[in-house]
Amino acid sequence: MLTKDHAVFIAKKLNADIRTKSAHDLAVIMHNGKRIAQFGIRRGSNRNQGHNHIPNGVHMNAHDTLLLAQCTISAEQWVEMMKQKGLIEESAKTTISP
Image (cartoon, one colour):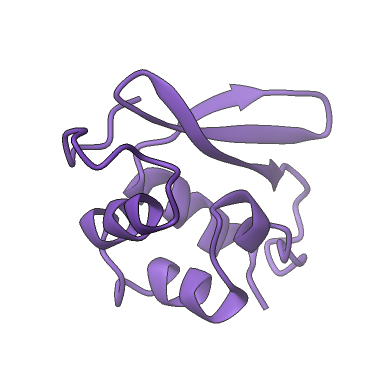
């Protein structure tokens, strides 16, 4: 299960722009000025509350999303995966920017 700690770590790792919303913060991942991914981060005090919506937001399966949170998959590898899925143009730079 993905937790709030995983969500926060993934957001930091991918240099997400955190936007405050009502019950959630919204982590928006941009690449070369284009929104590539986004997911909500619950603001509740229960850090173990599930964040199992994150895989859909970052265009990965649950296992790979957990690996992203655990440092097994780097931000650069995530960018390459998004290129393979056609979400980032192949000619685009490989740096993630807010």
